[in-house]
Length: 318
Ligand code: SF4
Ligand code: SF4
Image (cartoon, protein in one colour):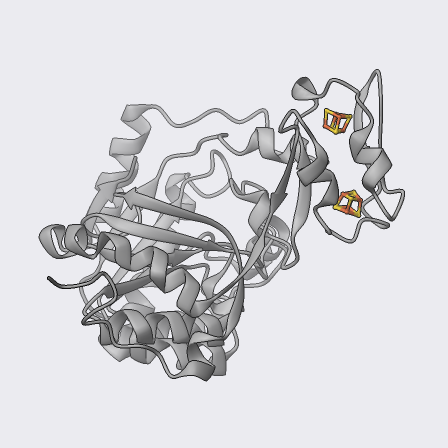
C-alpha cells in the first residue's frame, strides 16, 4: 500500500525551511482561480486600499483581534499579559497596540474565544503539507493552490519555495496579486507560476495614490512583465461605487489593460461588498466606506458590457 508520504518530491531542506507569515489556509475554494483550490492567505501588503476586505492581512506582523460580545470580563487576559497591554471594562476590550508584542498569551488564556491572533509563522514545507492534502481534488477539477493576501510578492522567497514544492509534485500554482512589488520579487516567483490573477484598481496614478496609498506606475510595469511572460493572466477589477465603477473610470482601466497587456485577456469584475467591516472593529481600525452600497445587477451588467466592448472576455465574480 502506498503511504501518505510516498511519491512526494521533498524541497531541499533550506528551501522547505523558509518561513512565512500566514493568516489563513482555506480549502475547497472556488473563487481564486480555476477548479477547486486551496487558498493560502499571507500577511503583509504594500497597499492600503480603502475598501480592503482583509484588513487582517495588511500588517506583516501577527496582530491580536478582539470580539467584545464574547468577553465575560474575567480578567485572565490582563493577568497573563507581560506587557500590560490588554485590559477590559464595561465598554469592552482594550489593547495598547504600541505595547503589544503579539505573544498570544492572552489568546491562549481567554476561556471565551474572545481573542484571536491573525498571523502564524509557518515553513514552506508545513504549508505544502496542508496544500497537498487535496491534490486529488485539484487533479479532478483543474485546480491547485492560490497564494493571496495581503500580497504574495511581499514574501517572495517563501512563495517561490512553496510553489517549487507544488510544481515538483504536480500541483498547479497561482497568485492573486495587487501588482505592487519589486522587480526581483516578481522574478523570483514567476518561474513557478501556472496562473496570475492581477488586480487593477484605478488607471489614474493620483487617484490610485489617494485610495490605496500608493501610485500605480510600478504596478503597470509589473503587469507588462507578467503579460510578456506568457503565463495565463486574468485581470480582476474590484468595483468600488463612485470610485472606479463609473463609465469614465472603467473605460480608463480597459484602455490601460489593452495598452499594456496587448493580447486578449479575461477580465473579472468583483462587485463591492462590506464583508470585512467586522474585522476592522476587531482590529481597532476605521472602515472609511461604510456608506457605500453594492452595485445593482443592472449596473454590473452595464460594467460587463463596457469591458466586453474592448474585446475582453468578462465575468462577474461572486
Ligand atoms: S498578545 Fe501578548 S503582549 Fe499582546 S495583549 Fe496579548 S498577552 Fe499582551
Ligand atoms: S480572557 Fe477573554 S473573556 Fe476574559 S476578560 Fe479577557 S477577553 Fe474577556
